[in-house]
Length: 332
Image (cartoon, rainbow, N blue to C red):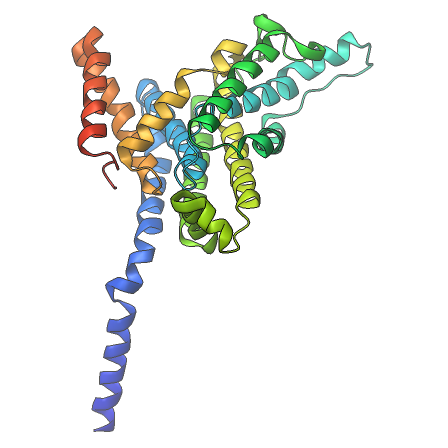
C-alpha cells in the first residue's frame, strides 16, 4: 500500500508539474528561442538576397517590439519613434566615422575612431537620455497631442542634423563610413541579437508587476495614479528603455548602410510602418509586433513582386480591412 501511495504521489506531482498552467508561461520563451536558434544556424547559409531580406525583417521586429513598449503597453501612440533611429545612427556615425576627421581638423597628433562594438552601447545611452529630455514634457500630454509632439520632435531633429551643429553631422552631405566594414553576416547576427533581446525584454516586462502597471496606465491613467502608481516615473523609464533600444537598431542600420544623412536616418515613413505592423499583429502584446512585422514585411515584398505598382493599393486595402474587422490585430 505504501509503495502504491508513493507511486501515486510521484505521478500526481509529475502530472501537476506538466500541467498546461505550468507549461503555458514557458511556451513563448521556448518558441522564441527555437526560432532564434534556427535563424542563427540557417541565416549565414542563405544567399545574399535572402539574407538581406531576413535581416531587414529582423530589423522591423526589433523596431516594432521597442515601439510596442511605449505605444502598446502604455497606450501612448508615438508618431515620431523613428527619431531614435536617427539619434542612434548619428551617434554611431560620429563616433565610428567622423571622430577621427574632427580630431585631425583640430590638429590632434593622433586620431582614432571608436569601434562599432564600442559605439553601440553609447548609442543606447544617448537614445535613453534623449528620451528622458523629450519625454519629461511630452509624456504629460495625452492622445493625439503626444503623437503630434513626437512627430514635431522628429522633424526638428532632422533639421538640426541638416544644420550641422558643431560640425558633427556634416549637414546635408551626411556621414560616410570608411567601409565596407560591415559584412552581411555580421549585420545579420547583430539584428538577430537585437530582435531577440528586445523581444525577451518585452515578454519579461509584460509578465511582471511593471507590465501590469503599464497596462493600468493604458486602461485608466487617472485611476492608476489614484491607486498609488507613480505613472510619470514609469512612463519616462519605459520611454527611455524604448528610445535606447531603438537607437541601437538605428546605429546598426547606419553601420550596415555605410552612409547616413538627415533624410535617410530620420525617415518619416518608418513610424507609419511600425504602427501598421504592430496593429496587424496585435498592439500591446509581446508577439504582436513579431507576427505583424513578419506578415507585413514579407507579404508586402511578395505582393510587390507579383503586383508591381499595384502593391501599395493592395497593401492599403488589406490594412484597411484589418483595422475595420480586426481592430485589435490578429492576436487581439
